[in-house]
Length: 181
Image 1 (tube, rainbow, N blue to C red):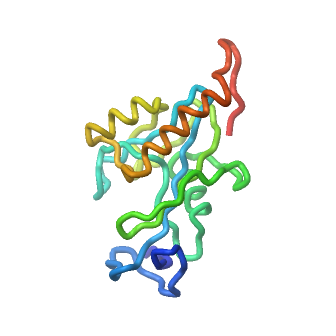
Image 2 (cartoon, helix red, strand yellow; image 1 turned 120 degrees about the vertical axis):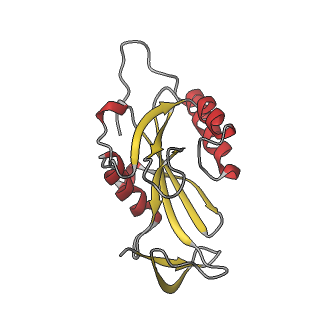
């Protein structure tokens, strides 16, 4: 059975370890790590949750999950990306994009530049049914339709970052390939 560290609202470990399936107490939080992959076209990789998932089956989301006991948010997102997509990144390749507090959860969202085609990824069938690169506008449309699950208060920050990346680094000319992960 999986266990995770329990945190307070300031992001500090309380010293308690919680077993999966057990409810948190009032004022307690679980740490989660997510990884946004951003390509040189300004698109973000999104994944559709497997139909067998108990929470939000078939909905679109970002790669990530809960940190296990002893893990940091960064370690959790690296592990989840390896498990769910078959992709391995080094910690220094990732940048912290957001840290936020939601309902019983502390989110650490990281970002990495990556230009791999979606077909090059090895999906964990129990977690992910498919992946695709999507523009910020496409992700916003999915969210507005209730098909993309993510903390709404933070989603626009991620989408704005992706749009801004195009101004900083214009898309590659036809025939050029961007550097991968």
